[in-house]
Image (tube, rainbow, N blue to C red):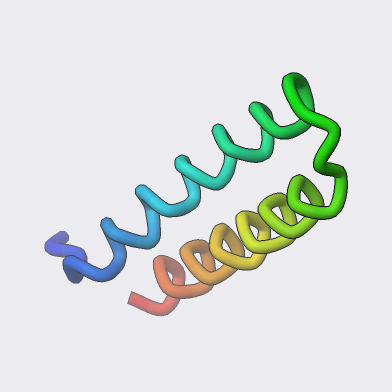
Length: 55
């Protein structure tokens, strides 16, 4: 199955947000930014799941 290019971009964004959330949690004191990145990553992952199921 061929997936759209935007799907792959969203997949990369999910990975980057996951790594950024981990980094912010373990190496900084920026709790609000960490929560924002985590929530954005969860929303992006849910979007990927729903998008994949509807293809």
